[in-house]
Every structure is written in C-alpha cells, then in structure tokens.
Image (cartoon, rainbow, N blue to C red):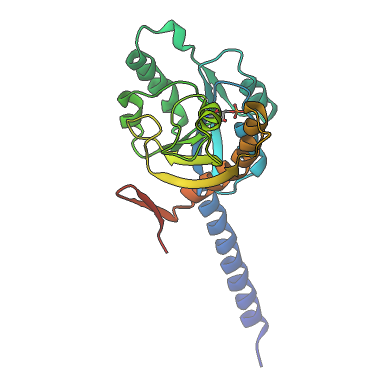
Length: 230
Ligand code: GRF
C-alpha cells in the first residue's frame, strides 16, 4: 500500500520535474535566439519577407538604414522593431561611416547582419568587425553578374537562366561563400521589370530559408563551401 505521505511526495517530485523542464525549455528558447540586424536602403520587401516568415531561431533586434526615407523604416515601425538611421552623406569616408555604424550597432549586440537591399559596398572596417556574421542577398546566380543592375546585365548577356544567391559577405564585392541559390528562367518576352519581379518572388522565399539555416547552426564554412554539418 502507498501511504498518503508517499503519494504526496511523488506528486511534488513530478511537479518539480515538469516545472524544471518547462523552465529549461523557455531558457533555451530565450538564450538560443540569434539576434539579427537587417540592413536595408529601400522599399524593404525582403525585410518584410523575413519578418513575415516568423523564423523561430531569430529575433530581429534592429533595422538599420543609410536612407532617411527608406520605406523599410515604416515596415520596421509597423512591427515595433527598433530603427537606426545613419545617412552616409554625412561622413567623409566609407571607413569613418562604418566606424560609426559599429558604435550604433553595439548596444543591439547582433549575432548576424542580414543585408537586404543595403545599397552600400562594405569596407573591411565593418566586414572585419563582424567577420563571418554578415550575409547578403544578390539578384543573380553568382559569380555571374555581381554588383548593380544584375537583372539588366543578365538580359543583355542573353543568359537563359539567372536567379538569386544568398552568401556570406567577405571583403570583395559579392564574392563570399554561397549559402543558397535558386534559379529563375529567362523567357523571350521578359523585360528588366518582369525579370526583377520574378527574382523578387524567389528572393522572398529563399532569404528567410537562408537566415534560418545560418541561425540554426546546422551549416559550416569549409574553404569556399557552405556545407551541412550532418
Ligand atoms: C533585392 O533585389 C536584393 O537582391 C538587392 O536589392 C533588392 C532589395 O529589394 N540586394 P527590397 O528593398 O528588399 O525590396
């Protein structure tokens, strides 16, 4: 026969075990969220896609922009995400500007910077300060058509397929290790506008996926290759 005291002891032990599990899983959730700063200069449709994807492994701690009238600012405000605006025109050099960016970022303690239409080439100052912690989305299949106007470049070259690349940022322009790519076919009737539209749709699908991959810790960079750890 189990006495009343033994039964009570059993219930108390069970409750404390359950409580410690819930508590532990909450702590894990809080501790494990990767703090992401999204950098955008324009309309911010990629920022919106990242927000809407509601990625469980990340917290968007900041939207940073160099453009005081970027629509990305409104998008961030609509979701109560802090915004920092630092107009590059107020700085003499790229380096000086980025030193200031680093100071502005500091209190937000980002683990990852996601460039989402940030229309500034980064200098080694920022790239080194956040080494291997900056990713970018590019509207072409790198290494083809780096830099600006990639859809136009692809059309003019006459390729039949272009696409989207998410990559780590190194000290070159669009040269870092590739995380994800997706293909966009080019059809005879395509103009720069129709092609850009198709590219954007793909971007909005793959950027959240890439951010999830990076923040999950499931990938590693070996040389130029980004590989699954498992
Ligand atoms: C995207 O096409 C992205 O690939 C490029 O800049 C564009 C930004 O668009 N780097 P949006 O501001 O996210 O709408």
